[in-house]
Image (cartoon, rainbow, N blue to C red; front, side, top):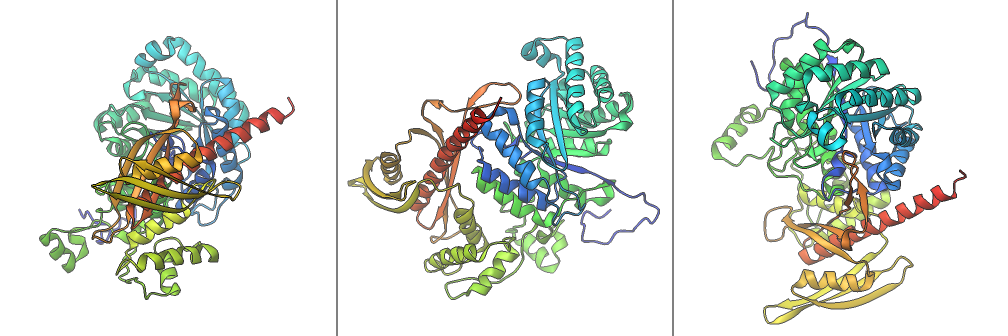
Length: 560
């Protein structure tokens, strides 16, 4: 049997028509629970629009009761992205889902956030493993069943599309699960999602569990069965595919596999496994795979979470061949070492070389090839000016450089404070000194200087003297976008408000956790990139405060 989708295989004319595998993306909910992946409302909206272009069937837009800001983000996604149908294979808009614990307050909040979307869903959950029942919820199995019934019935009274998840199903008693899920179906659940919450199971175990539940749960044929796997043992994708083999027809995934702890099942891995190995799967998705790379990079840029180079499908090395024997084989025929073409996931193969003599038309064409054809004329000019400045410093501007330019120019938070200039003096015999010029929210230019233990420390101290927003730097990462001494450097940082005074509610535990804000910057000067990254993180933190304040004021002003 062939392992390449590019090699012809016999077609069975009597083969049954493939069923649809629904893709439920939880990047904006479970993915955002990754430490440091906090997104503001505008970033969530842009990612949601791209998820729609990608062809995602259901978008879990957030956990509305977690905070006023999260509620507003879900509501705006439901209102602005919920009706969109452009470019979607199905011709139908995405279902917009909100997460809710199994109680009336959570369900009301979730429904109020998603109800404006033409297609909306309430996703409620309750733990079913003895570990969670005893130590977290402190209830017995009978109380668990009763609480699930009440929550699902209440959710169904508000919404026709209700999903129920028995949290920690991977470590729950399978026989007890059939009881809970049978009652969930009677109460009105339309989708049953089976979470391997802590990434504990193996593919054989998880596949068996899905099959067992479908065969033994009363009314199993009336609902869609779903998987939600975590990657603690590196088995999330394998477990998800095992679930699909055994009857699951919805998969819960995130872009780049981001999520709590070791992350979630990766959307791109599941989708491309199904597409690349059609002989092995009786399903197909509605995903436009040519949008995968662009969506992946957008999520990476907004969350400030770099993609590991050897990440399947979307990593920088996913289609790179260095070994001589591999290069020889590739030159003879690409199928020798590639089971899919880079074009299928939105990676261009053009050999167009861009440099300081390249014109606007060539630059625009390359942007279109990379998936950025929807830039306005103003945005194109802005990006072209930045490209020319980079080209003056480099002989050749690569696709990776262009991606960094676009990310730094347009995937940044609302500019509350603007970085104008930064000048640094440093060396092995002098104290590092930085002078920084910023424009404040009222348009006034402010300049200050500071001494630090190094150039970046000096820059950050100078910025802090002006902005006066206390915070703690929790992570600082520098990497080169391309090879060579003239490479563009990318800096990703994470900060937390000082003393952790700002919190978000964790959906599973209900515990308030300190919020973290990430920032991203790119430049051929790593000090400038560091300053841009810091300003990006600060602006995110300040924007979040503004959004929270505005939402609270609006709520207070509403008549009771």
